[in-house]
Length: 113
Length: 113
Image (cartoon, rainbow over all chains, first blue to last red; front, side, top):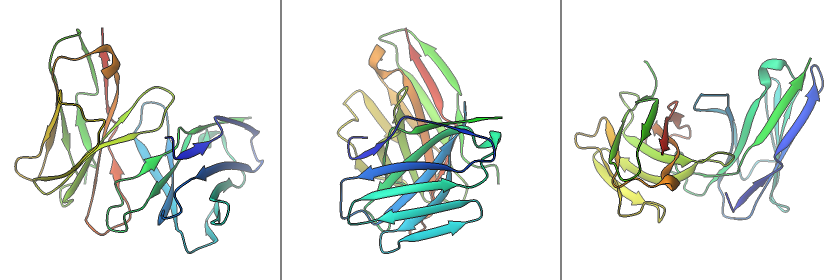
């Protein structure tokens, strides 16, 4: 997506932390999402953060939001081989319409044993 | 609850033919979305319905594309006179109005030869 940018690839060793970064351009974005897509599968929502939050933690996942720089990151602690997938950052400006989002082009995470 | 299901999973068609895809959302969900995802890119919003009403269409949805949700349950996406550029994964998602999470199906992969 032209309004949401991500680095294309990330490779880590099993047990390390992974950090996937995303930048977005629209300052009116209200919700920011992270989705996971495994081969041949649809998108699975991992977590989301409101634009008035700085951080959200959910088990092994930590989302950091720097609203000033329009920068979002997803940290996966203790990365496992099952975490290998494409991760999409998405933004939504419509507080009542979660399904209408603008997606980045995805970061392919490869976890090496 | 079987989640969002899409049919068929794969479709190969000759250029110029018409194709129709079906999406069955989660039963109580009143919103239904169609996205297109080309290789190496993130999903791009096409259109969405609230119940049977089509509330928004992206400029990506050319005149050859039409979507319906006649009874507010399942939806169909038809592409007329397919072109090679229509080759993509077509994703459907559903949600409840006002909720923050949308659930995606596994998609229909269209190949136009």
